[in-house]
Length: 113
Length: 111
Image (cartoon, rainbow over all chains, first blue to last red; front, side):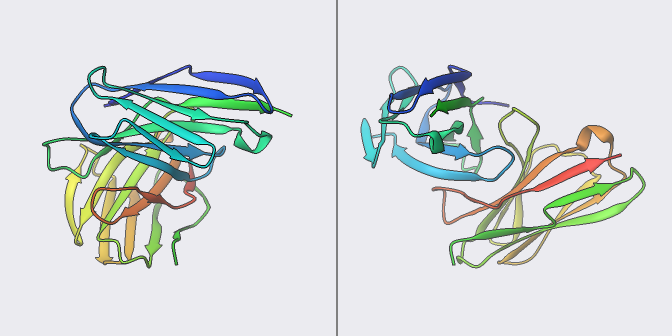
């Protein structure tokens, strides 16, 4: 079953603009991860944020985590056409002892050149 | 080598065929995973191997049979599949419970 829901489901922006994607989840987590997937290909890990962290940066990516609201956001600044892809959040549930990363529904990002 | 490889890239099979998907990693990761992904949907976990032992089977039908011959290899044996099993099958590996490294996937079509 899906742990997370993401919004928007689809996002279309112009090159140079910022893109923000949101993820909500249901259970307590050890960490939350963001992945990117180009059409029909494998997923690429972007960033991992631990449950005791509130914000993390990696290049043009900024991730926030609010465990009280069970939500996270991914901000891509100064977007490029090459950022066009689907973006998924994924949660590692706490306390289950399972290596079961559960993916959200995903946001399809289209960056127009 | 930070790559997970999967073969074949594409597979078309009939409902009576037996085929296998293969996955390989040489990063020393002790956990390996099979995911199934339908179009415009997130990946769904099928199986998890931890230290070459099956630790999670997410109620997957027995027509899918995983195998982990050694710490670098993961197979998925397919038999008597249904057309609704057509999907992208993704293999991944990880060291402990951190980021997953995904392969490029096998696009499976069942006729």
